Every structure is written in C-alpha cells, then in structure tokens.
Image 1 (cartoon, rainbow, N blue to C red):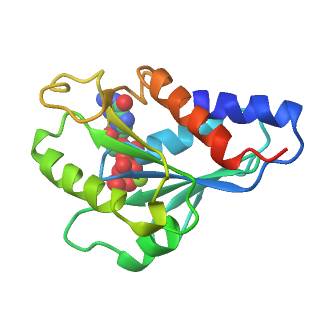
Image 2: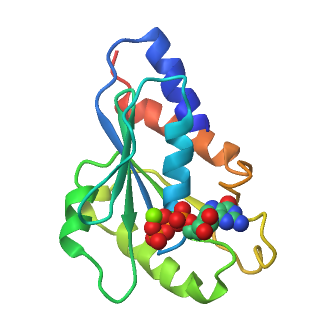
Length: 172
Ligand SMILES: Nc1nc2c(ncn2[C@@H]2O[C@H](COP(=O)(O)OP(=O)(O)OP(=O)(O)O)[C@@H](O)[C@H]2O)c(=O)[nH]1
Ligand SMILES: [Mg+2]
C-alpha cells in the first residue's frame, strides 16, 4: 500500500520519523480489520503483531507509524474510545462498505461528525469505498472505489495521503 511504501522509503533515508498515528475508521463490517491485517502482512518494515484492545480496537505498528481502527456508528457508540483514539491522529482513512447502500447515510453523517472534530482540524481524510470486487458495489457509493480483498483501487488515494503526511510528520 502506498502509505506503507512511503514509510519504507522514508525509513530507509532518514532515521528520525516522529511517531504518528493513522486512524482507520468506518461503520461495522466496512473492512477496517482487513486493511489492518494487510498492512501487518507487509514484511518490508519491522513492526508489531496486530493487537486487539479490550474495547475492540485493532492496532499494528510499522516503523514509527501506528495504524489503529475505530468503529463508528451503531446503537452504542463508544465516545470515550473515540476521544482517546482521535487525540494526536495524523491522518484518517475512512472506509465505507460500497455494497451497503443502506449504510451510506449513516457513514456520511459519521464522516462529517469526525471531520468537524476540533482535534482533527487540518488532518487529511481519505475516504475509500471498499468491496468494489463484490456485486452490488458502486451505486451511489462514497469515496474512491477499492477492494482490500483484491488489493486494488486505493493507490492514488493513499499516495495523496502519503504526500500530505510528508508535510506534517516528516522530521529530518
Ligand atoms: N468482497 C469483499 N469483502 C471484503 C473486503 N474487505 C473486507 N471484506 C469482508 O467484509 C467483512 C467485514 O470485514 P472486516 O475487515 O472484518 O470489517 P470491519 O470493519 O473490521 O468490521 P467490524 O470489526 O465488525 O466492525 C468480512 O467478511 C470481510 O471478509 C473486500 O475488499 N471485498
Ligand atoms: Mg474489525
């Protein structure tokens, strides 16, 4: 994934990269865990194993970058966890299930609420419509269509995100 490509590239040329956190956010079933596992499988950089917190958030570290998942929406949102995870985030990858047309309104509302959080002022948001390999994806979708299963469709978006991160977290 270009974000990981970028971390690999920067790590090879510069020793100091500030510790940073990239949030992977979405409604239930959007594909957040799939993305975390895929990132963890990239063996070019040392990192941690995927861990799952007591409250269900998954985390993996690659170099100095920590990726962590945050579920939003649903009947019982965990406001405390959300506040904790949002603090200090450098970027957001907002994952939408492109096959779940019924969830689009809720996903849009959650995206807007998150984008309005004062802690995330100026933080880049990348919105991806996942599961584009599946029938039913793509009508009235949100975000660039991609597939974490097939590993396609997010390259331009994550390159864009990586370019934004260079400005904000690259310390030499
Ligand atoms: N067809 C297809 N299915 C996918 C893709 N990504 C994830 N899935 C499936 O969608 C379901 C949910 O994926 P997860 O990665 O568990 O989603 P999540 O956002 O972590 O879900 P929760 O942890 O329950 O909130 C699983 O059955 C995945 O196999 C994809 O790119 N294409
Ligand atoms: Mg999950």
